Every structure is written in structure tokens, then in C-alpha cells.
Length: 85
Image (cartoon, rainbow, N blue to C red; front, top):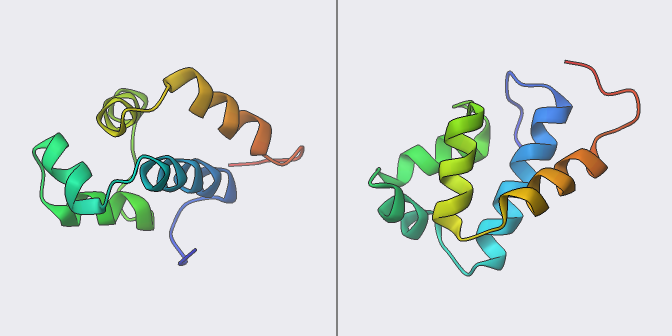
């Protein structure tokens, strides 16, 4: 994953989102269309250049068509024991 200004725990969130998008068979442009945003919006999220708050995270997850609870669980179980911000 490219270097960003965010912590490794945030990188876990990004990896889970990218994986969910890819498993749904969506390209960045497909997700962007569903969100009514340009492809660069999704790219910036996935590269860690644009940080999501909880509400935005839920909107993106719903646009992907993924289960919010399952993705939050995947993030929580992937965090290192000593995760720090």
C-alpha cells in the first residue's frame, strides 16, 4: 500500500474496503458512479489521501453492496493487538 499520512490501523480499513469493492466486481469508476462522484474521489480514498468519517464509510460500504457489520468485524479482527493512532 502506498505511503499515506494515516496510521497502519487506518490502512487495515482501506484494505478491507478495497477488497470488498473488488469482491463485488466493481471498478473504482463503478463505485464512483454509484456515489455520484468522480473516479478520483474513490482513488483518493483508497490511497489514503482522503480520510473517511463513519457516516461516509457507511455510505461507501452500502454503495459497494457489502454488509456493514461484516466489514466492521473484518477491520476489528485485522487490527494488531497493539494498534495505536
